[in-house]
Amino acid sequence: MTENSKFTADNKAAWNASATYHQATLNIDDIVAKLRDHDHGVFDETFGATLDAIGVRGKKAVQVGCNNGREALSLAKMGATSVLGIDQSDAFLAQAEMLKNAASLECQFLCSDIYNLPSDIDADFDVGVITIGVLNWMPDLKLFFQAVAGLLTTGATLAIYETHPVLEMFDPDAADPFTPKHSYFAKTPYASEEPITYDGSSPGKAPVSWWFSHTMGDIVTAAIQAGLRLERLTEYPHSNREVDFDIYEDRDAQVPMCFEMVLTKP
Picture 1 (spheres, rainbow, N blue to C red):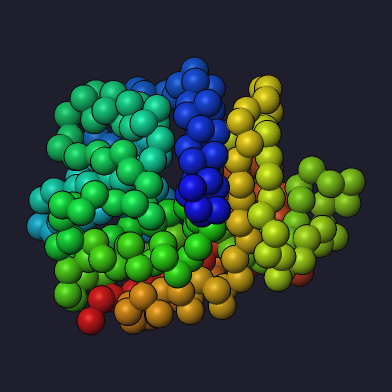
Picture 2 (tube, rainbow, N blue to C red; picture 1 turned 135 degrees about the vertical axis):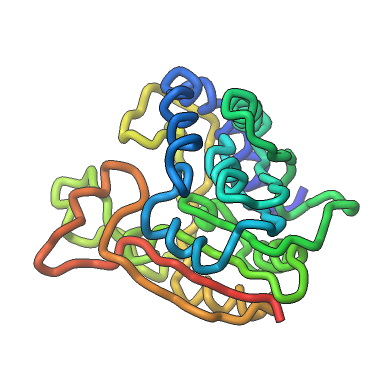
């Protein structure tokens, strides 16, 4: 087993172990209502507008790191002719199938490590999507973007909406959460045995998971080296991650909290 495959295998086990907690707090009715009633499904206004500008309707779309499928289903809601959601957690994809059936939307899901995709997978998607909480689970950005680029057809667009690397410097649970705790250039992966949750709670202990810090330079360079062309990089002062980080919004000295990258495959 390579070091990368060990990290991804550990992360799969941690996500699967955390799925029980997410299942207990999963509000299917609320998600289905958003998928039915909102133009952009569960996507927020910022990323919804970006996807509108790219154009999803009538195209083949793929989401890498789709979790419980709510965003992949949102792409179907927005008119994609076919959607594939990829995630390595079979426990979360079981939730995705539940949401798919409840929402009556067409979407396919694939359980796979992005570093070890099936050889017969489609490689002709028009739109690729990566959202919050994907890049920092990846031990090797270069190989990650190569795999993502390999899913896209010529002329395709990849849209990324992620947490800003600067935010990784801060710990909202620290005694002084506004003083940087971590180096922006940290390269050692962070190991955690807490369940992976979105609401700031820690209901118990879970298998070890690994979190990787990447600079903005790391991210942009890896995407370009994978043959993708950068069309736009936009940084935002709002949060699109766990509620713990809301304390960093609306500050006089505001840090960037999330970003969008729009790339195309020449």
